[in-house]
Image: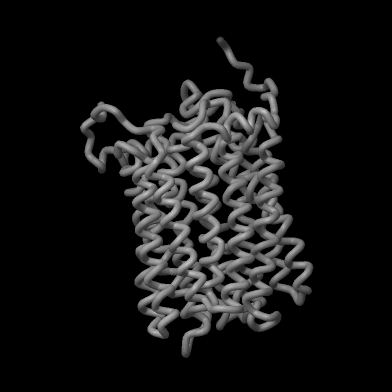
Length: 430
């Protein structure tokens, strides 16, 4: 059977979504994401304002803690992709990563509750959480094609993002309430509990378990080289990742460090910043619904057009802007983020061979996050040098850098494919 790449693909209806939700393993993964991402929504608020409340802490202190979380995500991400493509069960590996992150957040929460938290101790614990994330995310990308057939990939990715957005919105709102009422420590303890539940659910997943030995006895170095060849052979992949390393520099510094500082200086602290993040995640929720209905012939063109709106809230933060305006723009930004991420992930899963997908995904995560540790470390000094507004303008400019990918014809003309991983015969289907 031949496929016309210009033909429209049917949009998923309610019956198709309900059919996917009846899948046991996909349901387990979706619920695990729902629970875990609820806690993940709590964590940034609790961690940011917990650290800023420590004696002598400032933006640089928070940047140091977040740097310690981000650095292992970058350093170990490639290793995580190799491990994910070699292990017997991707779901079990994700469960162990969730358990490790939960243990670290539990200890951090107890330290805050008992008054023994310091910048150094919290920073050390975030290293554990960051290392766990470096395993979890490339493994998750590689697991999805084992849960559904190729034609259902975009719908499954949409359901994953829907779960993440809904849970993140609720978790962020809960985080603001917890920090304002009972303190950051209880927020981190609740986050740890969600990791534990997620780990149990993932341990029950049976999809994608290898029943025999690997066909290849290649070394991990050989696996890395193979992943690198798959990654660099597709210009549309490495160019987008390269530009997102700049964009994520701006986003990380603005959203994780400078935003909480702005909220403390101009608004009422945690509740105000929680409102911005809740609006952003609500926009992501709407963006999921939009993305699940889209079936563009050129998915990366649509994805990059959606990305144009993402840096607008950071520019608004750099101006004397009312909180309500920032909240509204964060909502629009969230829509763009979800549309991009779902179309991007689906494109990777369609065009990259299944046996290499986690490794290519790890190079994606590695490249996209490569400058994030530097951003977090530089946010405080950048604020001291340029002032808060000046630093936010720099972040806004960098945040818009990903849109430059639109100049490349491989990005604009990449065609959607109907099958699962590695559906293309060779090269880029244009």
